[in-house]
Length: 439
Image (cartoon, one colour):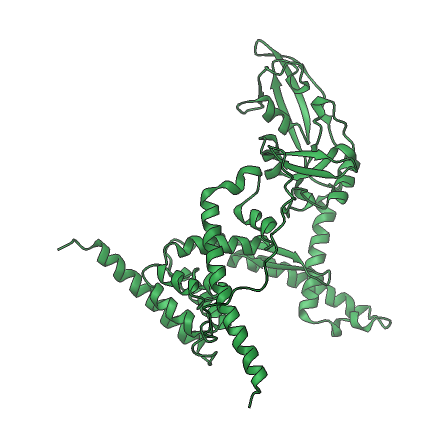
């Protein structure tokens, strides 16, 4: 028998959870409204989720899920009401809004109230896959799902997940298995007594495949890459009718090779981190072709990327290898190409800066400061401290957020089959009803 203290603790947790769910429902609704409003983009933020990551402390993925779920709930009033009442958690809402539509949301609401969070997530994932199989838009188009995702684990290991069409997957596996066979054969010929864990009979098949993948990559690099490249640059061929790139004729016009006429500001952005070839013209005819001018040398680029470790815009997670080098004081205005005047910006934020969405300055200590166009530092955003504990007045039902089935066992395959069929039936019936002529 549980003691009174444990029961009281569980009651308090249940009541507080329901209140937090209801508060989160309001927060999710507001994030969707902010996304629609578009005010988050005024200072060059990449997305509303990016704004949320800076201003309320969630990561970008969670912020994106809040925005997505908020928009989905605009068309799902039954689920929205259950969320606002504290009966459903955000985890349940973001799972169920990936499958529910207005025609079947009552069925999904009933399931969400009865299932545990883990059960609901598994069911929704299974039904989503089942419905995708039946979607005629996806039939035979496996290329839509292809991709390789990578992330660094907390222990420093790199983890990869690849999703490939059948024929491509077979080719990749053939290469890996062939390399694994060669590696296993080599180890059998030269056993390692000092490191027995490296012997072929001690390696698992996943270990051999990992070594084989590395062997394939090493072979490709050795065969096709002769010079290490820190980061790609772009060679820009600019046709100008004056020294517009040097700022000596700011009203002059310029155009990109085989491209349109562009503004001086666009020419400056293109030449900020590129190999520039200037073709000077008079009356539309070339009179001089300048040499390639490399603005940022490989050594400076490497030092800049090591220092910045990625795009320096607040909250941006683009890695260093995919960033441009930006002159804080522009090269054409006399800015030097050195580390003190260079900063890494991803392509998105590089463009936004040249569009005037935000400014970059250096403080007396040499740190870079990002400012809005009206001079407000982007990082000076501090959440207001909560005043005391969350108000629980009017909240007394500790069972409100509890799964009605209490996490009872269920058949995953049966649940997915029934719910997928039910969704298809209800959506078809609703579509037929809408198409039927009014009597």
